[in-house]
Image (cartoon, rainbow, N blue to C red):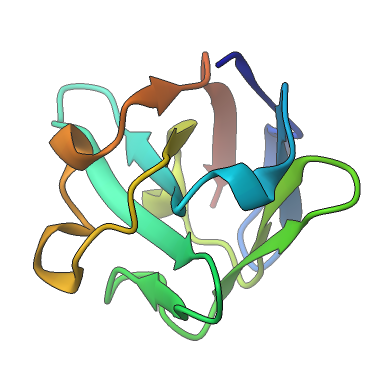
Length: 126
């Protein structure tokens, strides 16, 4: 299931970006959609996830209150609205998906997701 992430770029601290991830099929076919990021020299980390059928949205503590994940079932896209960006948000951002409705204890684990986009670079300057 190809996933295509885009929308990254260079922004000043305090600014915003909206990432998008286009899937090759309707997002309702996925039980869980997520975003992860990987900064240079660091491991990939969970950012946000959204489960289908009113399952709610979940965020890493580092982005809670600043980032919002949403899904548009009509155009096969999941979004990550990133506000009040900080230099520590600099990373390559990856979208991920699985047909499973991931349990909460695993929702932040990359192994729970089976499909991955190619990543889009976000750079926040101070």
